[in-house]
Amino acid sequence: MLSVVNGLYLLWNNIRDRSRLTVYPIHPEVYQWYFDLPPGEHGGQLTRKYGFLTYIAITNRGLRDVSINYWHLFLKTRAGRSVELKPLSITEPEVVIGEMAAKKYPVLGVKGVAFSGDTMVKSGDSIVGFAYYVAEFYGDESSNPLIENERAIGEMVIKSVFGNKVKTRIEFSRITLARAQEIIPHIETIA
Image 1 (cartoon, rainbow, N blue to C red):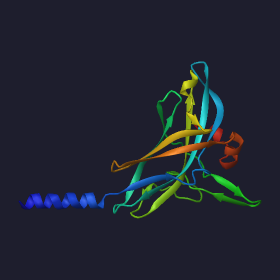
Image 2 (cartoon, rainbow, N blue to C red):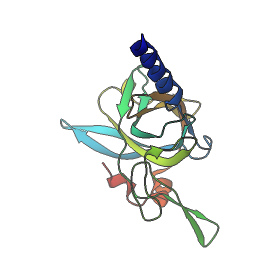
Image 3 (cartoon, rainbow, N blue to C red):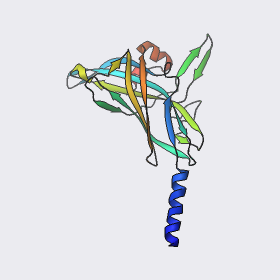
Image 4 (spheres, rainbow, N blue to C red):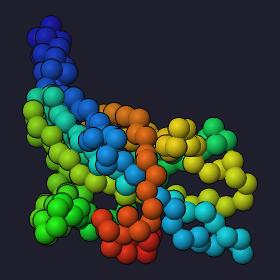
């Protein structure tokens, strides 16, 4: 009988203390972008390439610290399928504010000059960072990203090392490759 009570107590502690993650885009109307990249090649055919930059926050409302295992983007296509994209390593994005000032932003999981790139989310805390993804399509146009109201539609899925999954919908606004290069120089070469 004591072992059953002990087991129930341990289960209750585990459930009570678990991490409770949430993810959301930061300023969804401002910092969620997609852009055309120079075409690639696959099997002798030209491919269509797109870059996706998102700035997200991950919060932990639980009582246990947790590390983020992955942050993948699931992109909807015109054919109704979902394509899984894995993040690529980038330098810290920099946005010029005014004439002389520039602001650097953190990148999830990448240590940079100004930020540590931590993926550990402490209890009652949050982390923020940019994530960059590249999608490449060839063949039929139905495999292109789904565009609704001039926005590409995606879903960010975050998974912790304990297996907790959270997700959020992200709508990406179109920017030019030149604008993306102002934020991250040579972004078109990152693959």
